[in-house]
Length: 174
Image (tube, rainbow, N blue to C red; front, side, top):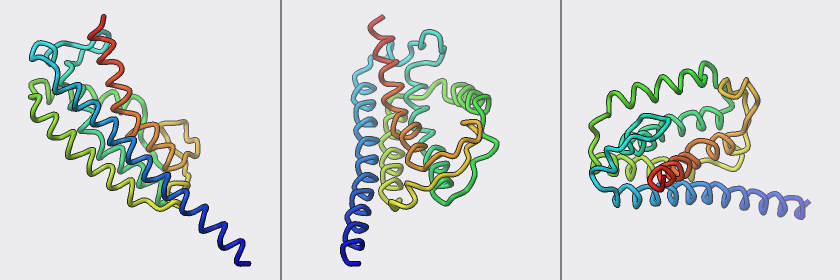
């Protein structure tokens, strides 16, 4: 019996480490995006992303501004709640509204928000138990497929800065 308990303890420790690793990766991506943003000239900050239309600065601010939404959705999954009413069209509308409302965002404001919201997001991820990370429920954004909290974190909050950073870097090279 103690062997089974010991194995469970090791498994839980490994999953707890996994949560911390997710948070570390989120912070690493945010730091890379901050470094990139810090190095942009004012002309680059105001440049528009080809095929997207948003300014570079607006995209960086967008990453910062959606961390709370992404973490909230992951926490809902961690609690075993079904995610309903979130569609690709909703996300596109939210992004378009954000772009309009934040068209004049300054580099300083975007970087500040990115630092604050990424730190808060990382702390929220570290607070999740191994069981919460493994909890799955249907998610409307994915055709009601049952997804884990960990997947939602990896596909949204953790990946988001890396995704946009790669696109921004590619646009600068073009």
